[in-house]
Length: 234
Length: 312
Image (cartoon, rainbow over all chains, first blue to last red; front, side, top):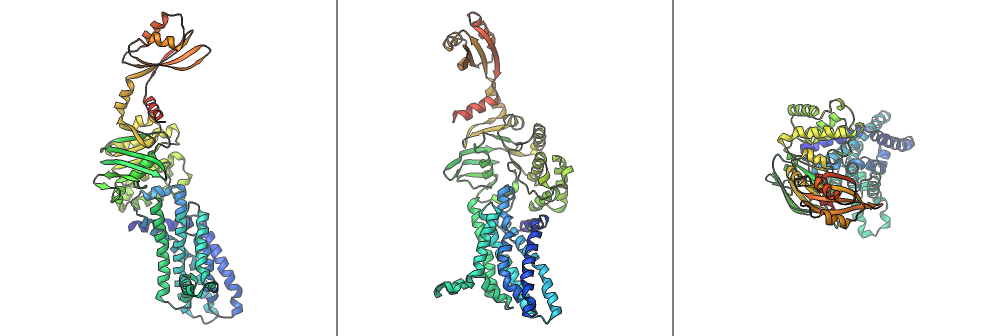
């Protein structure tokens, strides 16, 4: 298990060596900042609701860009061979990389903490939904990172990995907005697998074990899927 | 130390490695020799636990690869072909990372890195990104990577491919320096290299081992035979065969090619004596014109070419 730590440190620090990290963070902050503040003063409410409402959609195309290179780049350059002939297991590799991507998504959220802090000067902010929203955002980031990692295990091309990850994340985010297209018998099921639905619950400030279990199991599924793919390939 | 039994690997329908058996003793330097695509890399990848064999067993010491691949990986150091390393990392950071993964403790780590840096001669590039290094330095960092845990078994896949002759000698020199206490398996398609560094050579072609012996025995097998090339005018191959075939020691006379009534032929001799004089004396008795006569020693190169051609 010590190997997980070193793989995590390596992957996490590599994000900040390459310019990709800064590009992704800037794009994320630009988009969320613009959409949030363009309507913020109109609604005249000291709340982050609009920010968290939009977050699953922003996340579903920004987050898959973070883990997209984690496996496909290694497979492409061949460093995968040097890595796997070190005394590490698939589990160590995947966990280390998954944690690095999750830590990076969390780091991406840190600058947005400025929003609630400044809003609290403007009015009386309700901290419950804000804290709930950030916990939800970290969990959502973890789940999407794990899906991105899975996409990255499928191909040696980072762009393809990104697109696959994005499609899966978009599907999970938007499925509960399109429930009226489906027969009522499967609506309950579709709502349960929708990431947007569970995230909305948490961001209202209600921390329900069902939602937490949902995000944790989604992360687990992504990791398990990548594990199966790697085992099958090598 | 290492015991490989009927190791087989299929990629889809293509058989890359076919029923290979190998026993490698402690302290041996085994050269896996073969043309490109013969199955060398696949064999090494299975040996290091990177690829799963389709069938067959690999035992290293008391471990088997299916059950104890982690223990085997701890015993081994492996340098894949063309040393793929993380390009963005500094050499120093990379070696520290490997030392951490290999679970060296802090004192040991610094000492080991220091030793390896001297051994591989990479002190002056320690603070440069790996992606900016020349191929020779990249390969040396790869060697340092493979030797980080002071492994009992060192597996090197084409350690000198793509290097210039000077760099090749340097890498060979490093391998020789470390070879005293280690079991080394290296693959190459360059014969002279296997000859210079290995004390045992296994020639592999189309996934099969077709020769496996000590380097000296292979060389000795080669030294009993040699070739004489002659070019003659005013004659025919049949006449040459009639005239020279009777000389004892001559095994085979073949035509290499003929141009403008000149016949170039190759005579295979299996004897310790030099037959050039006898051949000359025989030819002097005739009215043929002798244009050329020279001797070619049979080297490992010839054996290699013969063995790998026959199977085509």
